[in-house]
Image 1 (tube, rainbow, N blue to C red):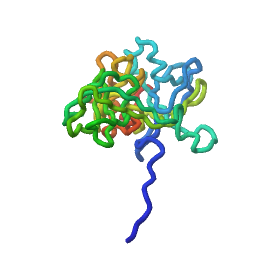
Image 2 (tube, rainbow, N blue to C red):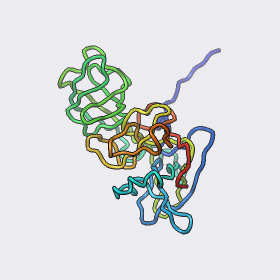
Image 3 (cartoon, helix red, strand yellow):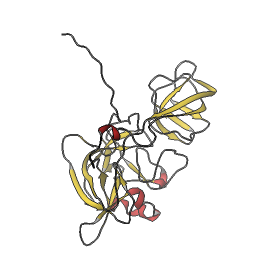
Image 4 (cartoon, rainbow, N blue to C red):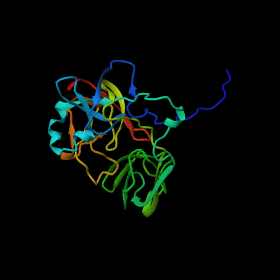
Length: 272
């Protein structure tokens, strides 16, 4: 049998855009208004329930955690993840990207021996999980897995002589994924149980591993944000929902794609 043609690469993240409900199987969805006094909820944002005498409201985790004391009640109030929905008629290509649609490259200097995948960089400003990596000794297709202060872990070990001290390394982000929002007062659909794609900006997800939620900023971890889902604990700056040996949310598959997207599974409902 003869075959011909070529594979067309995806226009967006390999694991799906933020808030994509994934997997054919169990899924429980709830719809509530975004709190009128709150901020917009992005697709893929975690949400909490604001209780009232009627149906309640949704607020984004970022909005909720703007009050630091709320970190203590997050496990009781966590309600799910805002789903990605088609919200208006428009050309499909208008949704392929958002924000800066050009390639963004950051170059810094680093040092690392051959056979390792941890780079000691002189500056981590502008770096983010999922960016591609280029430089002396860096294998093709390498990307950032995690950032801890000035130590950047990449997906492939260095070869040759590694990166000599002061060697230039370039980190590149190509086109941001499209992210829509639910405005205050609009109805928002959130996945309460099931699998969904979310950004993961810290740590290396393991299939079945726990998901942490950032509750406070950490300048040593650029690219992370309050309310974000992460794969590594950060002391008092993050919380796990449930127990370490029995978390409510786990990573469905290991790793992140080139855009920092991961897939999580919410195993049980709480503040429905």
